Image 1 (cartoon, rainbow, N blue to C red):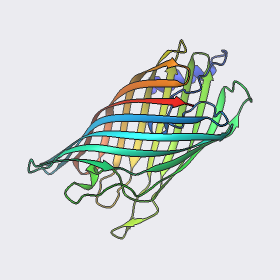
Image 2 (tube, rainbow, N blue to C red):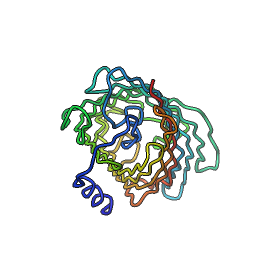
Image 3 (cartoon, one colour):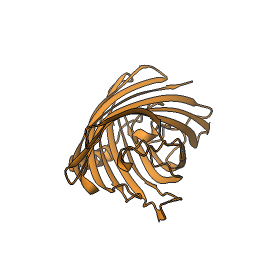
Length: 282
């Protein structure tokens, strides 16, 4: 993570011309449809993100495994130049292997989310180099909760979860960067216990020498509190990716990541993650 922080600091100090694409995907993967560029009034965006990842839970020798493909279909609209509003519909295809070697395979609706990004500060109206944003949102309790699957391997929490956060975007020529800190603060209780907040921070640095292709590297820190019967803990993940923009309003990206360090409760272990997606403005 140190090299990423140093590179980001060097990027901020570079006195270069501003060049930022409208559909730049530097940012939190959960905010892909919102984007991290400068909001343009009346812009509408349709996005699809596909993630494949694996997890395992080793509970005193009883091992459960999860392979999951998650499909996030999102739509965003910019009512003005200072913000965007989005809604995301996530679906999960899960293959769970239980300790008795029984296998459960199903499609499940995860927690639908509504999010907004509000520009709090920009250093200039056109060609801004620095943007500070507020992130607000709400995850809805739409996830299915089958009894035959452990809490940690379900498609969502199934609770009302407000989302709050702050983010910064910087643009300097072919370079752009993004830093965010967000929190999910559940409102409801499960089995008489209020779910603990979850915190996430992401730093991402992108180099885009042309309008068609770019590369990026990112680091993610996530801390989850205990949620009812589910385990919390801390995870540090890092990855790299490539971005393609064959058309002005179309962006394609592919990225992969691995856990660098994790301290998750009750034997939970996350493995590699591959993610791809597309956004189109119209």
